[in-house]
Image 1 (cartoon, rainbow, N blue to C red):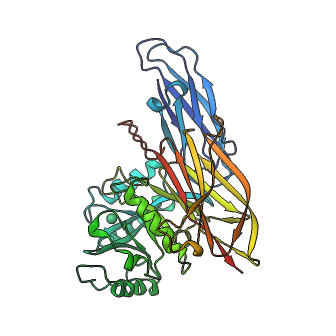
Image 2 (cartoon, protein in one colour; image 1 turned 90 degrees about the vertical axis):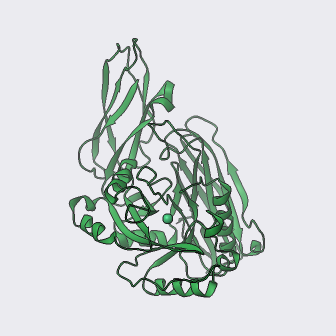
Image 3 (cartoon, helix red, strand yellow; image 1 turned 60 degrees about the vertical axis):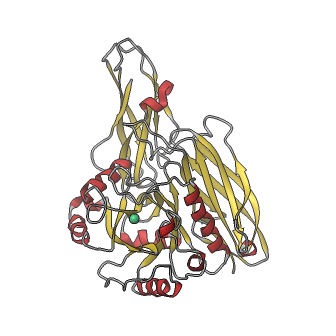
Length: 443
Ligand SMILES: [Zn+2]
């Protein structure tokens, strides 16, 4: 069976019903019947999996059904479909764009043929759109030559619903950094030397940030030649964050990225500044763009809102599952101020896996009292779904006593990442998502 979804043309609007068509074709040699599943996104009014019986189909016969989906809020998103008995063989999706405030996803570190990437800016954008993403930072090595072409795109009508921006990756022999919102600024002085130098890097970071830019240290453990070393990582100030999941060569759960997660926690356990954890593809091909991705709430799809989200870490990183985390009314990336030594708060975690393969969620706590430890975060709660429905949408609420100086973040595990899934090769990888922390501070 072949299964696909036809979307209405143009964009939708929150509160307005849209007609989709779910289609199947019997591509086998014999008469077949089956159950077709449609998974609307989380932003749909009803995100229940819909199931339809096709009845017996002769070889080559088509089947279709109109489906109405109403969206509650905006964002570009994916609707998934598959044949129930053969999910992996038939798993497919359609992308649909809903205007207005909502959760938007994208990639903030990737390359085109303007530096060492293999694909054009246009091909990279198309790959992002096909995956259901809404923003892309093309960050070329030590150049802004791509800025002109990106500015030309920004003047086209397509730019209304896709934010393409030019960043740069500052590459030296002793560490790489990705900078945003620096367009037009003079190229910073070369950082010389054969080993990372804290004072020189700090000058570079200060120069970029005082000009209104953001600096993220890239892939700290991708390879020994890119390592900054603890002397720099544990002492540099003023950076917006570090890449904890760089997808160029490795999955989030590979030891190189896990080391970056652990350093990230150690930086935050110092309690000096809020260090944001970013997930990027660092793709050099169009195909790899947007895997992994980040997703966060944007009032509008524009550079100012994206800056706010990046600077504060109001997002999760993922290769498929969607992960949302709250403490009282505070969301990931926000600070919960308390008056007293301790406070009991209400924790809410929601994990959505369109493929219905959730395995577990883990809540971690770190804090200034753990700053000397090699691994400063400890799991304080862990939960696994107990029904098929919970494996698709898993929501937990519980109370927790928190103290100032702590931070909390969540990781989630699924059988495979839907956005990383390659339909041609039927290639899958373990699904993973993480949130940025919620910070607990004294009022
Ligand atoms: Zn790169």
